[in-house]
Length: 474
Image (tube, rainbow, N blue to C red):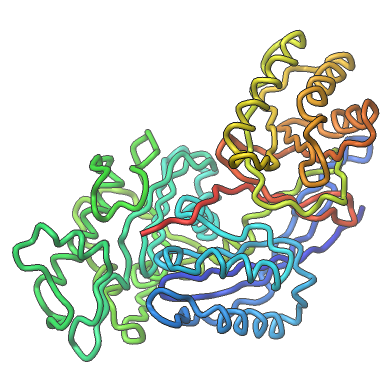
């Protein structure tokens, strides 16, 4: 192939703001003429960036889906791209918006009408990783041994992703954001539930109607800056902390450098604040983070993107390409939200049958809901060198334990880190021609990840998105 162009879109529906980017990817076979084809994205171009609009709500609990859809289709017109031209990309709903009643409904409805989106949701962990990619921090970490934390602070949450050598080594999400306290005409107009919870132990909590200049507002902002510093310094150990959303930090190496992204970071690096526009604590929070003594001990690095980090990551960084060494039954694609089960294969071929049997039983128990079986992907990591006979032994084991339960709704889905997908896929089809099979490679995943697999592109490759999928609740 010479090159092939596909279009991607990213939409971020956040606590305070909603934004969208449309990008193009150029695909090319980067392997030599005599080598196995290896299709890679060689160029990513942002074609259109939307204005940043205020996220529309019908009331405090319900996102205005109609207004968001109007905004999206308007952006497609401005980008001169039809929704049907979108081959991949992500709609993510972030921060406090992900806790709203109709959050799941909104992203799935938009994903169904606004193009071939693969990622249709993001839990706070994935959101932090996407923001780190969009801010350029993940790329920065490839060039240094330093452990870098990307802290993406929007209206309702701070999503932290920690990385080293271009790999994410941990995540954590905090209720820290610019709109957790809002003002109108110099008085407190709203206080978010996590902040109310934080003040439960106070003898005189701040309340709606108090003055915006009240000393307790400053005290709360100071507490937010403190918990960010504690989290990055490895001092947050209280699982019940009111400002912790979900799990405690999962990285096990000390953070050395920090990068801030998100709307609040625009105030940190650019002094380009939207404070007057939104009347909240964003600007003051940025000031306290900048001046925080403990945070000063880290090396501060600059992001490539601040307010648009998440949407840029969603539009340009979520897609990988599974190469031309794949075997797929095109009729069963696209597939969305397929859970992955890691099947360690660093064993000799006599044990293939047992290893596959145990993996299938565990995956089935993990992912089936009551009597309803749902498709899952077996990920073969650490495959040893396989002779032709070993390949056949492995394929027979896969068919023995999966063929009887497979159908168009439940295809056999195999993901391989190395380049064995085509030979394994073709061997399975040679043994059993009726079973639908998706066999892809050059993708790195682990148990707990989900994958979306797009439709086959003209070059014979498929776009794949690896994600950690969760809607968080209050």
